[in-house]
Image 1 (cartoon, rainbow, N blue to C red):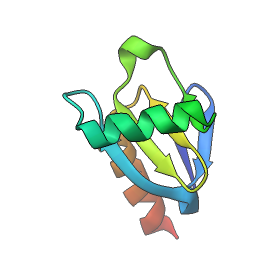
Image 2: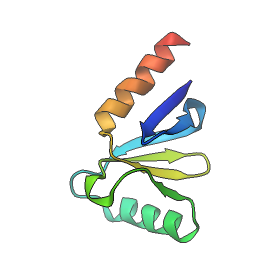
Image 3: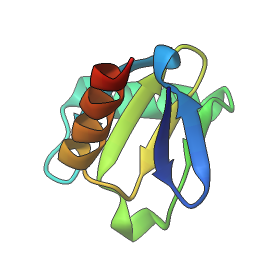
Length: 83
């Protein structure tokens, strides 16, 4: 299973640890995680910064996606049902 994150970026479903909504106020812990990933070149911004809606935490990288966390979670659940 692969999960489409937007703009032709896909990740293996088995690599996804969490999908987090970042449209609203983020906790300091999430901000720190994003900053650390960015500093270590493990952050991939899939879309335009002003359209960021979700954070996908993977085994080796983190992805900021323009697709809502609800949509990504539904996609992931649909893929799991197919397996």
